[in-house]
Image (cartoon, rainbow, N blue to C red; front, top):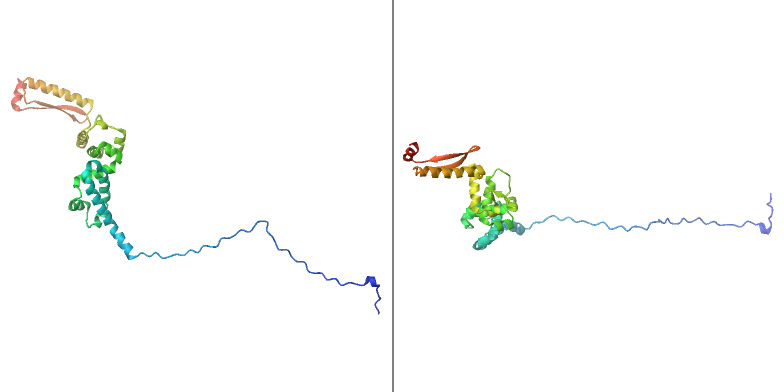
Length: 249
């Protein structure tokens, strides 16, 4: 069957439809620049033989320097006693004196003639107990006497706190005490005798009066002493046998 002819103006036109192109996605936020990863290289620790040698020598070098410093300061020990004590405390460390070939600190002091042993430990004790300002204010002898006093007392007092507060010791303020006063107070503590109190002072006054009376009456050798016995105070009378008859008449 023949196709009917269409009019000229109604002829089909070939239309070519191009495929739609997709638009690229654009984020609302700007892209963040990423840092490149750091590459960490780990090196094995290498200890040269020379470095090991230097480490072994270092304590000996420090010890020798301390000995030289002490020797220089000894000529002005009255002013430099605190620095000498600090140096001695450091020198007494085991790694230092063993580095010089000594088995103990006492041998080092004796053989190298650094300083006398008693004086050395006195200065070391002072620097351990006080700061420099307190030690210089008290002086070396008074500082050490206070250290000994604290060691003798059963209380947990610290020497530096006693010095800072000008504490009262045996009835006196520390500022008005001498090194001898502190040593006497220490002896009383070590012997178990308490510090002076009013009862004991009164007893001593009575003892002096009684001694004077006995001697006036003919007991020339009479000696009367007051002492504490337990919680009380007693008087003790000593005299030769030949003077006893005077009291019995």
